[in-house]
Amino acid sequence: MSEHWYTLHVKPHKERFVYGQLIAQELEAYLPLVKVNPVNPRAAKVRPWFPGYLFVRIDLEMEGVDRLAWIPGAHRLVSFDGEPMVVPDLFIRHLDERLTDIEIGGGMMLNKLEKGDTVKIQSGPFSGYEAIFDRKVKGNERVVVLMKFLNDRYQHVQLDAGLIERVKQ
Image (tube, rainbow, N blue to C red; front, side, top):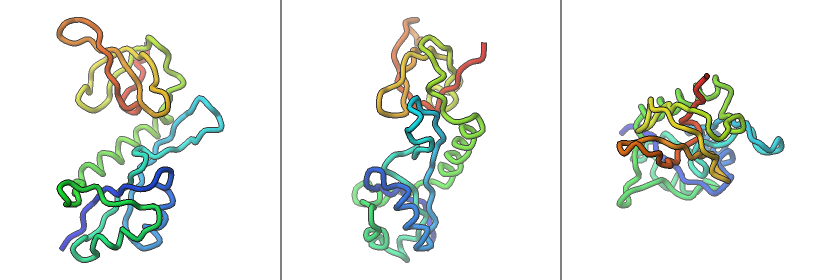
């Protein structure tokens, strides 16, 4: 019997509420939040990194899945073939480190990027590559960048906004 991290799917915009419910029930939970600098000054300044999801550390053999099923605002654990998927501790640790780096950098500053700015991709499959900022994707924290590949032509690539950083010139 051991505790593992699992991903809990929650109702839209109920991440903080469910997180509070988990903490009140003395369960270990992690709600990754990221500081953003929205264009609209009335918009939220801190948002969930994974809208609709949070992480909970629980011993499912001892506690059972039903313990989470009755939490108001929670849908279900993310499962594959009916089996709740374990999230590695290393993933949680790296995620927390990445969000700390974004926080130290002043948050995701999408409003300071302009079309044509050179950016560097900080993590993910294109980590270390430079690209050209094209645009923000309306309605979420994603961006489109232009990258040169083997054919020496620019291709549009959509990424999480937190993965890029403007190159200082």
